Length: 318
Image (tube, rainbow, N blue to C red; front, side, top):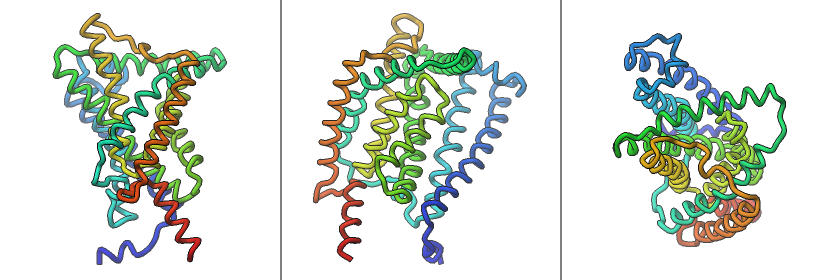
C-alpha cells in the first residue's frame, strides 16, 4: 500500500508547486507560532513586539523565535515535500552516508578562500547607485538586521557563544541548505537540466529572500558557491559543513571582538580590494576542480554531475 503511493511520478514543475505551497503555509504557521512564544516568554503586548525585539531584556525570546520560525518556514517544507514525492525523502534531499573527510576539508577551504571574493563583491554592491528613497529603506533594513545580530552576539559567558553558534551558525546552515540546495536546487536541476542556470537561479532566490540590498551580490556569490558544492558532491552534509563554517567564523570573530572591546562591529571583514577578490576567485576555481575530481571517483560516485553524466550516457545508449 505504502509503495503504491510512490508509483505516480511527480513532474519537477508539480514538485516545485508543492514545495512553494507548503512553504507559504509554513510561512504563515511559523509567523503565527511566534506570537504565543513571545507573550509567554516576555509577557509583553504583541503590538509592541517589533520594537521590543531590540530590547536586550527580551533576547532569549528572540533567540527561541528565531530557531522555531526558521525550522518551520524552511526545514519543514523541504522534508514534507520530499516525503510526498519520494519513498526515500532524506536521500532525496542529499542526506547520504559515506562522508569523506577530504571532501569536507575542500568544501570548507572553498568557503574560507572565497572570503576576499565576497568582500570585493560587497564593495561593488555598495558602489551601485540607487535613489535616496531606496537608500533610506535599505539603510533602515540593514540597521535593524545589524542591531538584532549584535543583541544575539552579546557574549557574557562562553555559554552565550555556544548558544550563538547554534542559533546564528548551525541552525541557518542546516535549514537553508536543506531547503535551497537539497530541495529547490534539486527540483530545478531535474526540471531545467542546465546546471549553471539552476545554480544561479537558486542562489538568486537564496540571496533575495534575505532582504539585504548591500549583501545581495555577495550572498548571490555564496549561494552559487554552495550550489556548486552540492552539485559536485551530491551530499548535503558537505554543504551544511561549509555553510556552518562560514556562519561560525563570523560568530567567532564577533565573540573575540566582544571579549576584547565589549562591543560588536558588524563591518569587520566585510570588504576586500578587487585584486584580492580576483586572486580569491582563481583559488576557489582551482579548489572546485579538486572537489569535482575527488567527488566523482569510481569508488564513491556521489557527485550529481557524475550521476547526470551516467544518466545521459545511458539515455544515449538506449
